[in-house]
Amino acid sequence: MLKQVADGVWVRQSEWVWSNTTVVRGDDGLVLVDPGINGAELDQLADDVEQLGLPVVAGFCTHPHWDHLLWHPRFGDVPRYATPAAAEVATEARERAQAMAAESASGIPLDLVALLTPLPADGSPVPGELIEHDAHAVGHAAVLLADRGVLIAGDMLSDVLIPLLDPRRPDGQPAAYRAALDRLEEATRHVDVVIPGHGAVAEGPEVAARFAVDRAYLDALRRGEEPADERWGKRR
Image (cartoon, rainbow, N blue to C red; front, side, top):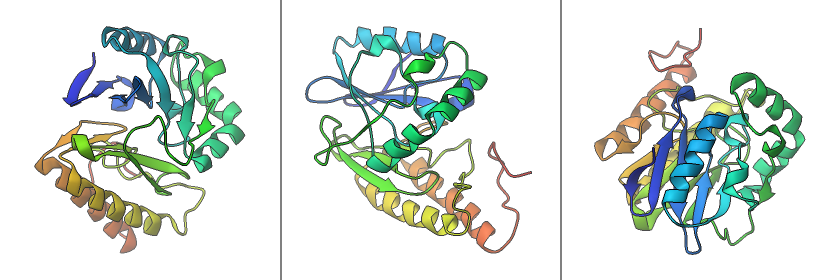
């Protein structure tokens, strides 16, 4: 079921790793951000979206990991955007993303996995401002809806997952992650709702708490310590 978290912004959470789909009302219709996860849930999401009474005009993928590359025929044959860097990675890794989707979730339309279009420079029809960074994944982008007080954070600022670093760039990744947190924290000066890719939506004081716990995790890594963090995905 869709839950409205701000004017023209709804969230639906999947059972799979507490994954969040965000639906945003734009000027011409709805934009689906990271829809998921399994086939039955995608079908239910399509039911929920139809009840809003507006057409889906686009999709947006925050980053090129398989669980953010999904789609359903009922959403329509519309552009599915990502940053140019993310779209390139998704295209190159499409077969692997399809294999991971087939292994991890049931009933997913595999032929629709990872079909992305680089977002045009003006960002249309995705509303708001994109904040692109390389934390967690190349071409990762958050969506700042400052007029609605919302930041769609992608796989950042979760209350259930630790900061997951990109294994392809181990040397520079902690620094890149800290830099991304700085940029996102500046953006959240304009918001009171943060929607992570996985976990509960943060509201009010919880927003600052998400930054604090992630910085503590990264600081422990920098000191060469095992982070005292009980979120799921903790290193073993």
